[in-house]
Image 1 (cartoon, rainbow, N blue to C red):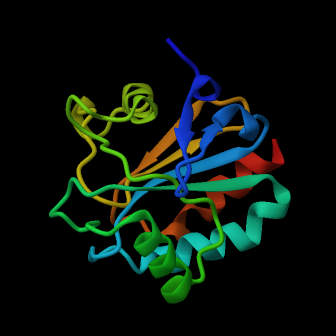
Image 2: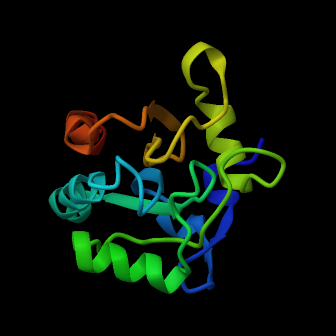
Length: 161
């Protein structure tokens, strides 16, 4: 099975990004949407990023339009929305599918490594979060309604290792 650092993704501007560049960092990978009830979590995610980025945390946001068509915008619209409304400075990537036959390979890996409730691999909704340790191991999966601030203790613990 491939490891997290074996994947390459496209950033919000369409440029290839090898996830190997994040080797040794703690990663919080989130599928996002601009028109979702959980969209205000961008603020909490940015707060986590500001608090821990200097200590080794990277947050990677992957817009997804698979849940209620809540991310219909273009890359430029998504980026602008996140910056203007929530001051997002963490990296955003190109829109992806997280479920189905066209699911991004990264998400296929994350779901297989850390299935959800009752062993289901499917992502249930926007703002599902995966925590990946500095060695590239997927250590936790958080539900969409898990507020970013409640993940801070797990982040702090892993950053001290």
